[in-house]
Image 1 (cartoon, rainbow, N blue to C red):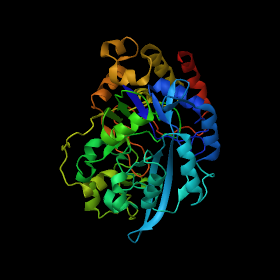
Image 2: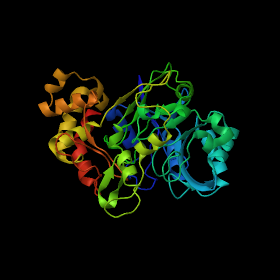
Image 3: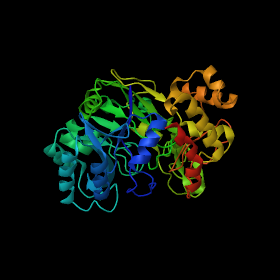
Length: 420
């Protein structure tokens, strides 16, 4: 099996760690148990130059320090269609750097791409597909985090109500959509127009810490690990084993809510309040759960034919943090995390495969218990909303924000290097 996280960012994207470089990405991919990463941000000239210098092409895919990479990038489109302003993000996958250069040459005719790893353009999704297919049919266009309130193609703030409304006659070139952290495949299975596209999951990581990288991923059973077989899996589901998801309640846009007022609620409550915050009277930000309810044409529990299965897992650092009552980046969490990694090799081995008896010999009873509950999807959550992460209700929930000064995090993480 190969585990792939193809949607990440580099240090050149806004609000991204300066440690999002190949060396760090490869190191933490091994710790996490991820075999294949997207490069992220291939539209950025400086990052692309570094990728070309350091990645080695071998038999249809690039690699660095034992980790495979496929050229990927995300762009933001802001434009008017159907009389409304649209804001959508798309992930682009390319077979090689020659095609990347052609993509970037076309983007240069539309605007700048040197100021941010995820550049903004004013053309439509339809024009994007037409241009990419004109360059190479091997380019994969994946609508990113499709339900996110901001910048998802089905998002409540500026989205569409179907793929056809967004892409029109170019819809036939869309084979895959990214579900995003605030939804899971089961939610998407309620919507018939998604039956014919493959559902993919990726971390959209802005840092390489193991509670970010690979938190959502794809599991392949490929005959050969190369771009051709990866794209075939996305387009036909051949060799697509499953996806790894977080519980959608953990995502930052699952419920409706108003962050400034510290208020959130389920869709039925929003309807009762006519969409207004009971504390300030302003409109609530409508979340993913409400949008799925709005567009669903099937009840919960429906599973389409040939659907790719999935598992729900919260990152190990989050589980330890919940038990200890300390933040994920503290020495206390790192010490326990390192102990488990040293014994079991990588995080996915721990989350998905380690026997309860084996875990109990390495860590304490409460951490063993929460790992098993996580694997069995038995955790309860306070759902996320309006940009606020959900938290596990078991034990004392720690803060989900990353530290502003990550130097202490780096010091705490150093102990893990001896396992690489």
